Length: 356
Image 1 (cartoon, one colour):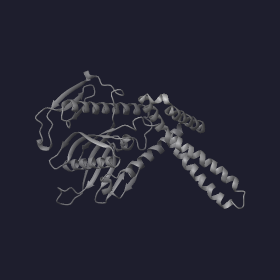
Image 2 (image 1 turned 135 degrees about the horizontal axis):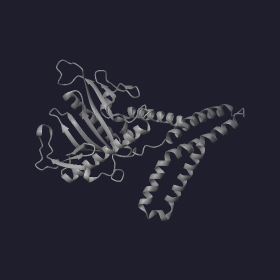
Image 3 (image 1 turned 90 degrees about the vertical axis):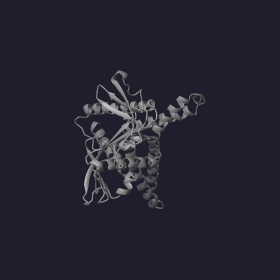
Image 4 (image 1 turned 90 degrees about the horizontal axis):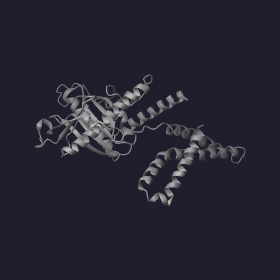
């Protein structure tokens, strides 16, 4: 019964409040942090449920006043408003009760690679990197480049960077996939529109406890990092390449000054990439017969088109087209991301309804 579940969550929230207020809790910072985290996770659904309970009382009060001729008109207005609020809050609570993605609050590692289209694809890959960094700025997230392979004209063959911030994965996980651009390149004298692509992969940052790597499975190579066309060459071999022998997965990190820092970053990337692959395999085996409408974006799927001549951006998974390409390229992504999150929630609610 939904009401029983919500009452249990409200009682759990009250118990957490009492434990946090207890003097004996103060001396244990780890316990305080854990209790605060549990409380934060429960807070949205408990707040919504309390609002739901209040509006249900308001509805009952308004219903009683409908029989009073002097209050009838006012009571009808309050009754209609309370009923609408109850319907909205009920849907909100259903969404809040959906199983949480355990990775949602994690930092992310983003990899962008130029695809079809030569130099224009590399320039587009750089535009996507700029778009994500500007979006991160609006949310006060920290961006740190881990590895970068540039072209002579300022494009990016591939770039790997970490975004550190609360809820980063929950907002960016739907960006994985093939992004397509249609525009007239600066290098095109005839004014023809070119179509190019870039691939984005968004990985949750995974720590050693969650995914352990066997050192015997990893081969480490060191080399000198360099900029575009061999510029900015380091005199020491501080860049690190790790090869995971069982899977053939290769990662590099060359942005830090020391070999040790680059190795740590490369290990983090390797761990996250192998973890993502393991999760994908598990999901595929469990849900082979069911394909989510939004999903987390398979890397070989075209998910979005950026059409510059027409000033529009289209997300093909949810059929959403926005005519504000300049704003989107400047990091105004919330409308797109909100649409993807809503579609994912609707799909999961539908699936949950089928199971019940």
